[in-house]
Length: 432
Image 1 (cartoon, one colour):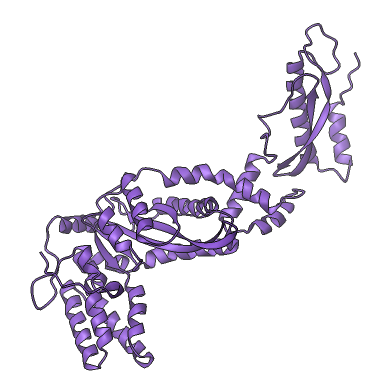
Image 2: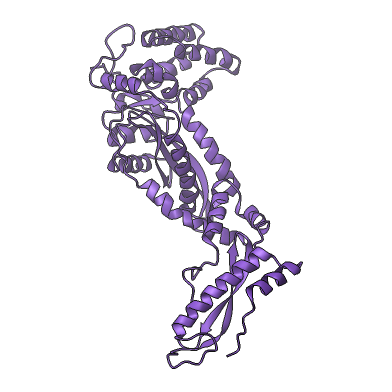
């Protein structure tokens, strides 16, 4: 029998002498084809060209399949059999021609905010012949399993004393047109004082039904011990908090509230009114906060700004709910600024996409981003100390909260906090 194989040393010398050959790529191709040939020989029961009584099948040429690797695109020759079929599942996916490590590179670039159009140019520098934007999206689907596990993990690190909730509007194609959907995100502080991404979901609109379903899903996964939810004045969110998280209070973001308040005053008085309202939050104690709020409303009344006075009086329990918690937490819980910084990073990456092809693609990108942020927070310095969180839980068990000046305290129930909103007038209630 004539040995048609080339000596390894002769082959290596030939590769080194050729200027147009990529040695590493050729070595990988030769090694992979040798392994496939050996596996085909086992299936045939005899080696290539060997006469044997044990032979059960024969070779029938080769078929070419492109294989995208870190060293570039390689055209592999996969052996074909006369009877049956052969495919190297240990090397290639039947419906995917990319090496796993290469898939991870593309997925990471996608999550990092590189558009699918730009990824095509990126992979060309790695030696990949071509990669369309639709192929990039298909490769990014490898993130789905990781994101799904992250979204449905049990929330067993409670109690979660504080929860921030916010929504972002995302454009997506549905039914042949571009529509806006709401991406709901919740962040909490666990028992160790670390921040956690609690959940992410997509709702058709930012209404009470969407928020209620989202919050109930968090409770089902183990969310417990919530004392305060911080958010903007989202439609239906306050009622959803009351229904899904009984016993929890609501803190209205002071930054968003101030923007709403300034619509009630003349433009010439906006700077002065903003400064006065900020002075409410600069007081050293809860009693002084409420006292300063009364002085500000009296001053606004004296200036003839009755609409601003009524607006501030109505919203006082909502924007000053933070005074019932330890002062060490005030800066973190009187606004959604911590959540806004996270939203800014989400926006930076979703703006690259512009319009998402479907809802799962939104979950894929934002979910992968939030999972990464969650891991970074897990190894970062504590957001709140054990001692201050213990104080917050002690207060929740029965320590009286600061009372507004001039009488008995008012109720902290959520249905009374948002009286007067959306044009509905509610009768003031007493605290119990």
